[in-house]
Each structure stands twice: as C-alpha cells, then as structure tokens.
Length: 554
Image (cartoon, rainbow, N blue to C red; front, side):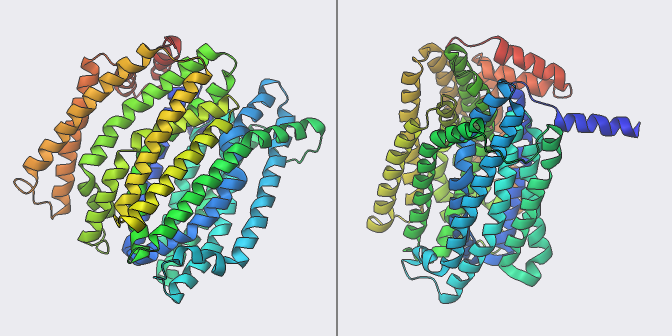
C-alpha cells in the first residue's frame, strides 16, 4: 500500500497538464504558496534588519538581476519555448536537447563574463544609487558586498529557470511552480538560521540555499523526460540557436530598456531624503501590486504560451485561445485590483506590520500602493499579449512599444520626483500611466496583426466585468467605513484581520454573485472547478468542454 501511495504521489507530481486552465490552476495553486512565502520573507527582513538595511538589499539585487534577465531570461521568455517545441513536434527531441544544452552553456558563459566585470567594478558602478549623496561609506560598502554575493544566487537561478522552461514545454507545470516556492523557503531559512550571526548577509545565504533547491527539485523530472546535458555543434543545432537569437534580440533590447528604467528609478530615489527607506517603501508597494499579476497574469499567460505557439499557423484557433485566456485573466484580476485599492492600508499593516515599519511609513506605503493598484489589470494582461506576440515569432513590436512606454515612465518619474517633488507615490503614478498606455497599444497592434477580434466576444463580457467590479468596490468600502473603530478596534491585529476578512468576503461574494447573475461564462467555469474540487479529472474534463470544446468565435 505504501508503494502504491508513493507511485500515485509521483504520478500526480509528474502528470502533464493538457489544457490551459488546468495548467494555470496548477501553477496558481503553487504560486499562492510561493507568494505567501515571499511576503513572509519581506516581513521577516523588515523585522530582523529594519527598513533602511532592507533598502540597501534591494539596491544590491538590481544589477545582478539585470544581467540574469539579459543573458538567459530574455531567450526563455520570448523564443526558447517556441523553438524547442518545434524540435519536439518534428520528432527531433535529441537535437532539441542538444540545442537547449548549448543555449544554456552560452547564456551561462555570458552571465559569468558580465558578472565578473560587475563584481570587480562594483564600488564604482553602484555609485549610480548614490547620486543624491545620502548614503554613507558603510552603507555603500554593504551594498557592494551584497551585490557580489547575490551574483552567485542569480547563477543558480539561471539553471533553475532553464529547467522550468524545459519542463513547461512538455506541459509539466507543477514541479517548476513548486520549485519557485521552495526558493523562498530557502531564503526564509537563511534569515531564521543565520541572521543572528551574519545580519543582513543571511538573506544572501538564504538566496543561495533557495537557488540550490530551485535547481535540484527539477532535475529528476528533466532526467525522466530524457534530458541529458550535451553540447552540440551541428548545423541543425546551430540553426535552432540562431533562430532563438534572432527572435530574442528585440526581447533582449526590451529587457535592457525595462531594467535600465528600474536602475534609473533607483537613481531618482537616491535624491529623496532617506533613500534606502524610500526604496524599501517603493519595493514593498510594488511587491503587493505584482502578487496578483504573478498569480493570475503570469500563470495564465505561462500556461497559454505553449498552446499559442502551436496554434500560430491556425489563426482562428489562436484568436480563440487568446480571447479565452484574456477574459479568464480579466475576470480574476479586476476584483483583486479593487480589493487592494480599497483595503490598501489594512493590507500593508497585516502583511508588513512589523514594529520597525512605523505608522508614517505604513501610510506612505499605502499611498504608493493606491496608485500602483490601478495598473494591476494592465500589468497582468500585458503578460499575455507579449507572449502572444512571441508565439507569433514577433518580438519587434513589443520592443518598440516597450521602448516608448519606458520612455514615458522615465519622463514622468523625472518630473514627479525631481521637478514636482511628489516623492515615491509619483513613481507609482508614472508606472500606472505607462502600463495602461502599453496595454492599449499592444492590444490594438495584436488585433491588427491577426486580422481583428470579434468585438462582441470582447466587449460584452468586459462590460459585465466592469459593472460587477464597480459594485464590488462599493461593497468593500462600506464595511470598512462602518466597522472601523465603531465596531472593531483596529489597533489590535486580530480585529484588523476580522475587518479585512469581512470586507473582502462581502466584496468578492457580491462580485461572484453578479457575474453569475449576468451569465458570465468565466464565472460558470470557475464555479464548476471549485464545486467539484475533489475530483480533478472530472473537473478538468468539464473545464476543457467549457474552455476548449466550446470555443468563442474570434
């Protein structure tokens, strides 16, 4: 019986997800766990090291992450999966594995070369985060050391990200998603075990530990699928690598533009009083903003990407898949966006309410989060549209739109921070304006590229989502105003939890009821999933009928 239990458990872990919603559901389940762990990590960092030191830590991660995004993530997110899928589809799997191995080797080599330059010249390069001359020599020295250690963590993340893309191409999503969650477990363990001896540097020890877990958890399944690292130099393999390079170079430029924007924004923050504290507040608000983007946006887009890549030559199927995924994402993201917008202060207090995050910092984080929250829907939907372009082997269009959008972001950030002196909330306003601009332009250009969409299949559900969301905002706002202080003393954490829970349940229940009342197709799909949660096969077969079998007319 024990062997049977182990066999069934392994079968569940390694089972392929064969439709978009089942894949997205598996990813979402593990991403929820990962996001919770990430927020716990953030809170522990504030509690153990204080707001200012955490701000130095965030500064130290920017440039190593920049190199990671440029050398390997750009290829994986834009071109690796479509090209590797082509090898599998043509029954040239061994060549595909050799191509993937060679691509990984090239990416790692470039990462190490650029990282060595950063490590050696870190004291000079990191001065970009001290243009306002508010940081002490000791703080800059700490930033340099943290940056050098974090480089090794990013090296491990390259390997883990590669295996994630490899497994997802085979429609295995559970193990990769769990691996990301275990990365946060490693960081938390590092903080709890080593903070008393190594202080803020324990976060880097945890990052290395988490990176090792991230890689090792995925290797057994990759081996089971037949992957063995082997370099290949044949013409067909190099043709695949050149195709990845040709497709990824616009994405690489997009990565340069976006991450340069992050670095420049960090430089803008250096002109504010207490820049490390302001950098922490900016990052805390951004983390809460991106939690639903990662949970709903990235997961659905990630699950849809292999399907869109296979359907690139069947545009009617492609459009149907895109519309289904777009509407499913919008249905989920709108109520979460308005929940964060209305309940921003209670959420900041509950998530980050360590004693070392004082009340003025809490208020400022909530004010920044307010403006970030308006862009949540745009950020989530952009992830799907970008992958739709990549599935069509078009990386140039996203590049141009990204360049214009990031130019708008930097221009507005400059004026809000250095001219109008709005402070950190001004950066969130600039981010929101640029995000909505990019969403509108990308959507219109995608529609033009694939011959347009059926407007009814878009605007009818959108109007229902919007009306339901407006009523949801009202249902969230009223309990907060009526119950705060009059019924609950929210200076106590337990009362704050009750107040937030009651308001959240009231709003989300109304949203679910209204979308059911308006006969929203997505509501029926998710209600079916939750009602029959115990029977996975029956759930996903019926979901496939709703999502895949009964296709929307594109």
